[in-house]
Length: 507
Ligand code: NAD
Image 1 (tube, protein in one colour):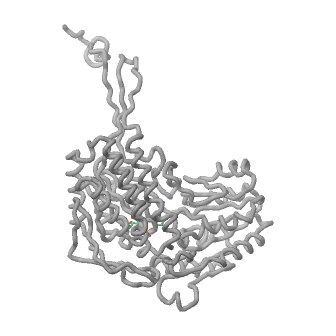
Image 2: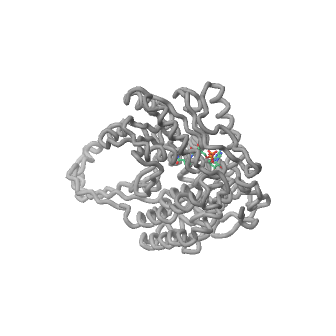
Image 3: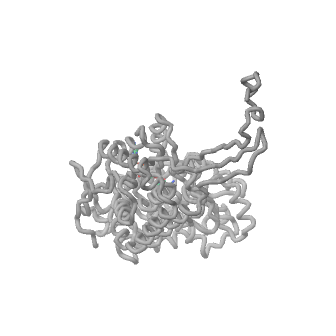
């Protein structure tokens, strides 16, 4: 199994590599081999990065750069992300275990087009809009200006560090902000490379900083720092609540992309020749470690056995193994902690009376002696109120729940505290749209899954988050709206000053 050579990596603060007295190890989740060491940042590094970001913002080196120039630099960065795809894949997958096939099409392959979208937004976003003159109380010209917020912090998880980072870095930079990024401890390398590329292509010192270290220390400092104006977070709902609390001290702008437990409804007219593979793709891609994975599959009771048989047949063909091999379908889960967490959920499901139609544990075999592995798992005899159906597992685990009527399926689908994504499979497109409109989630996929497009918004209803990333309004989350009112009358007697001063004005 190939690994990258062991190298020590430093943080990137104020345009320079910055080391720390302490370091930590980054290990492959497939082999447990040491792949890198990384400087372990602390509160003082977070503070230094915020200071650098503030100085850069106030200097105007980026914040007041003409948007054409900002867009040109960002376009060059997007090109480099495409040119250096192989290196980015190696840097990211050595730490998060994604297969090279998934990283090519998804984890890292999306980086360049998504960054390019924000390079274009730097030009096309409506930073200023004049409103026609208003006759009341007198004629005035009104302008809505969208200005950068200032210093942004981004806290990013391990599953898609590069792309989920870009969803924050892209709009922040396009709008003229400075940013401090805190990647997950396990997966900082692809984002570090992005920061270096950005600097090489002309993003000024201090505008884009990366600080590594523990979430509870460095992440918490950024979320509470008095000089951070906005915090954007992707991660678990539990930590999302903590981010909101920390940010409230200085009433920061907050956007949160949190957990999910997406429902998938197989309507009774679904065509299993593609929807069984589709449901498995929706649930098990990247070992199910995706917030928007479709994990609760609702099937018509009359077709339950047929659908389960097809799912088991197709899921049995998924090969687990070396993620660097292009033929491998599924790699490891990210860590021993994550594996043990999934196994605990599976144990509880068994205790609650569920049946394992496929998988249910660690695969057997010499090749799985090292690393963190979970079999593709399909569970039946599940009800929507069991823990396995309510909580986010973040593993290759699908639960199948029968329903009797379409109305019941919709009610069961919506009966969960999360609302990130939802979806359905049907050959009747009109009916599918009607059902889709009744699902309470930020994205509803019909006859597809994982279709994330930078031009379309992404984010959660309910406890799946606050705000939206991507889409034409993405920069709204990284700008303040300012209304400028210019009165044209230049005359005291035509303005309502007499509400306060009753004596007529003298010339
Ligand atoms: P996590 O919440 O444990 O960690 C996410 C990030 O927060 C990491 O960078 C971590 O270092 C940091 N962090 C941890 N404690 C912190 C604290 N007290 N203060 C500030 N920062 C802190 O989540 P995870 O295990 O890394 O990722 C899995 C979770 O992320 C899942 O729940 C998944 O659904 C969610 N997720 C959501 C989306 C989305 O777009 N909605 C995308 C990917 C992952």
